[in-house]
Structures are given as C-alpha cells and as structure tokens.
Length: 427
Image 1 (cartoon, rainbow, N blue to C red):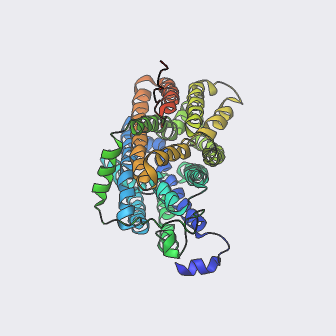
Image 2 (image 1 turned 180 degrees about the vertical axis):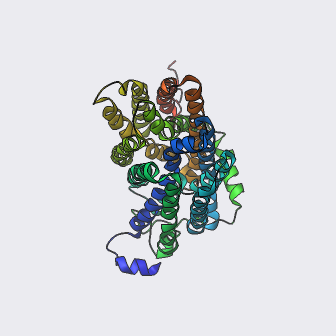
Image 3 (image 1 turned 90 degrees about the horizontal axis):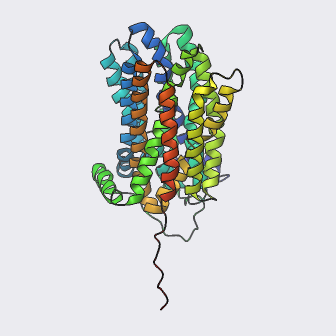
C-alpha cells in the first residue's frame, strides 16, 4: 500500500483515503441491508408468504447485524481490519447470490437472516468507530458523521434503482445486482486499506508528532476481548443508558421505517418505486443531517444533541399516519424532518462512548451498544409486521415507535453526567 501513499505524494493525509474506502464498503453493505424491503411485496405475490413471515427473516438479519458488532470490533483488533472485512464481504456477496435460488421461507431466514445479517454486521458502525479512533485524533465527530451517512447514501443510490428492477424484471435480478455491488468493493479493501497509520509511517490525523505511539495489536482471543469489555462496561450505568437509548433508535429507524415504509406506502395506493423514492429522499436529507451532526458533536454537548434528535424523531413518527392524508405537503414534510434525523444519533453516541470508556475500549463498547440498536430494530421489524397483519394498518406501530423516541429523549440526558459532590455545610 506504500505505492498508494507515494501516489498521493503527501498532498493529503492517507486517513482520508481510508475513509473513502470504508465509505464505499459501508455503502455496499447499506444497499444490501435495504434490499429485503424492496423484495417484500414481490415475494408476497410470488410465493404467498405473509409480511409477518418475511419480517421474521428481516428481523433475524437485523438482530445478527447488531450482535456481530462487538465481535467484529474484537476480531479487527486481533486479526486486523482488512482480513476481517475481506471474509465478511465474500460471505455477503456469496449469500446474496445464493438467495436467488430460494423457494421456501426457511431458506430466506438462513440466507438473508443468518449469512447476510452476520456478514453485514462486520461492515457496520463498529467498523466506522474502529477506523475513526485509529486514524483520527481531531475531526472524529465529522468523520464519524460522514461514515454513518454512507448508509443513507446507500439507500439513495440503491433503493429507487432496485425497486424499478423488481417492478420490471423481478426480485431475482435485484439479488444479482446487489451481489455484484458487494463483490466490487473487495479489491478496494485488499489493495487500499492499511491496518493503522504507523503501517504507512504516519501519525493519526491531528495527533502531535511528540505524542507516544499507542499500539492496537493484541494476541487476546476476540471472544475474550468482546465479553471482557462487556463485563467491564455492563457494571456502569452509562452503558445501559447508551444501550437502551440505542435500542429505541434502532426500533424507530431501520427496524420500522426502513423495513416497512415501502409496504406502508402500498397500503395507501403508492407503487414500490414511489415508496423507495421517498426513502431515497430521506436518505438525501440524512446525508446532510448526519454529517452536520458529526460537526456539531465536535462542538456541543452530545447529551443535548441526542435529546433534540430523539424528541424530533418521535414527533415525526406520530405525524406519519396523518401525512398520507395531506395531498401534497404531508409526506415531503415527514421526509425532511425524519430524514435529517434518521441516524444523526450515531456521532454523539460514539463521542459519549469514547468520553466514558476511552479510545481503546470505545469501539468494542460501541459494538455492544449497536447490538442493542439492532435488537430494537429486530423487535420493531417483527412487531410492526405482526401488528399490520392483525390490524390491517401501521398506525398503532407508528404511535408506539414515536412514544419510545420521546422516552429516549429523556434517558439520554442522564448519560455521562458528573456525580454531584455534597458540599460541606457551614456550622
């Protein structure tokens, strides 16, 4: 990779090229994760599977995506970022391609739930946290915002195109396009992604030249790293506040809206392409909102930022059932407000985890917090599907999701609060 360093000739720090490669990896993983929402209605029509059945496979996918986070972060510490990513991307591309042969629900659970869910969990937020803490001392919030926004960009790039392909050519062609996109990023990781700055004779961006070099190499077992960090963090109140607030974050984003919005639009007479275009529009606004959130988290109190993010998201979700009844401005207003807030919670949450647990432990701790995020998403994906199957509408699910966000807005104000020291009383 020294040839790449010589090519850029010191014109900019190699950390920014690393960010670009990881952005593309996260982009491909985001497109892969978004694919089942496009396939839901075609699978329902072709095989007669209910939305609750399809939602089960999606919920397994989402749960494994989150549960892989801490183990992926630990594997990156033990084996390196590049080898871990190459195995995950190969499994992702192979699993997606294999799903073109499925004809029974259990096959969808096995392939999309287990194989794709586990592999996309490696190319996830724990990867972003690992890269940011290794390569950047300053601008961490901004870089985390950029990488987090890649999932929104994945929706922006993939969803309308995939929905159009599904509508005109069928869901199997969608599968092959996604598998190809996952395969394309493999050589980029193999040739352009170094492990850490000192491999390129560099310091992390913004670190003084006289700062001591901290080694991230460990020979400890990844399982021991992951569970040891969990044991340490779980004894603190801040971990559980981060975990449960991010549980609600997952339930109110990719678990509910990301999984069911296209199908919800179909209930109101909109086509799959229109529903996917609405998600893509939200992705555009989230690209700006999450990047801006990273910039803000470098400058303002992360607890206060999270309070506003969760509160505004809750109000947006409670407005959603009414948005379909407003002729022109209803859904665009929801798309703007909810889109700006979609995953803007990530940079402040990473900042709080780093402040509380330190630079080395933060990626693994955040991996466990992301596990909570995806467990919440799995809960919402399955729960909303069951509510829709029994009630014939998503209204109750929208109200529950919005109410949970208002609870999270209160919870986050308690994270990393300094303990009050009792003042001695004057005699």
